Image 1 (cartoon, helix red, strand yellow):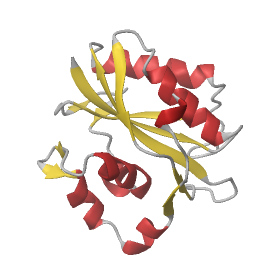
Image 2: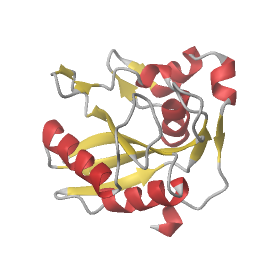
Image 3: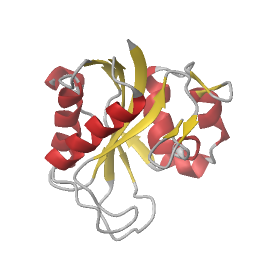
Amino acid sequence: MAQAWIGLGSNLDDPINQVTQALAELDQLDQTHLVTASQLWQSQPVGPQDQPDFINAVALIETQLAPLALLHQLQSLEQAHRRVRERHWGPRTLDLDLLAYEQQVMQTPELTLPHPRLYERAFVLKPWAAINPACILPPGQTIQYWLDQLPQAALNEVLPLQTETLSRL
């Protein structure tokens, strides 16, 4: 079984429920199970600001699926949540990003691993660091290291929610 890290986000149609439901659905993917997940976090949108704040989480799964097969399963889950891609970085019911898959580094037209912008995003790094700050990503630095590189202003925009994410699964 390979370990993969998934970023989850939503800002439409009851985002807390969208993300919580998606966490449960990750555990139901073929040849896959959910190992752990962060609590839910609230963050301002990246890109257009004329949309609601996002609810975010990071999950660790174990899977027998290859990276592209896993990506396709994640995209199917997005479609099941009625994801519509109207504009870049626009609002969405569910966004599932394959952040990392083991220590694999790959770049294809369809998938780049690790996710190319995860190192810049507090809404990914803060939840991830909350559950595994020592996780090492290529090029050999920890999640905590990447989080420490972000400007303090970016960190203040990501707030944990008082929810019981995993107990609802």
